[in-house]
Length: 119
Image (cartoon, rainbow, N blue to C red):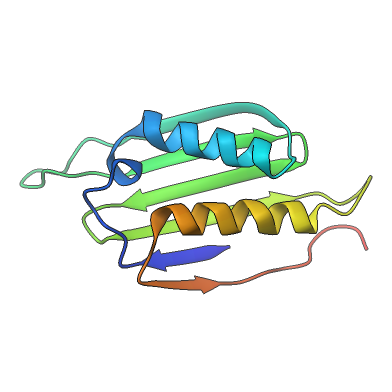
């Protein structure tokens, strides 16, 4: 998981679902994970606001990727969750996370990693 702050609120990744979707699907493939389906939604701006964020999910054969943007705050949250039942996908998850964090170019990134599921 990662909480990104200081992201450029005007960049297309923050505002355009199709741009964010293209990045996520490409990054999943580059990491060697299997995309099954995806859904990206841009919210309607609140009254008095010009910008609104995006929530996106890529369903993976190995589990999921979730992305939430808040251009009004210059913030992004990322969640890369992978199952390791058949093989250890931890390095693939890390590669996916690294690619996404680099694309948003945040001023700061707080990351957390959890070992979950069956041991």
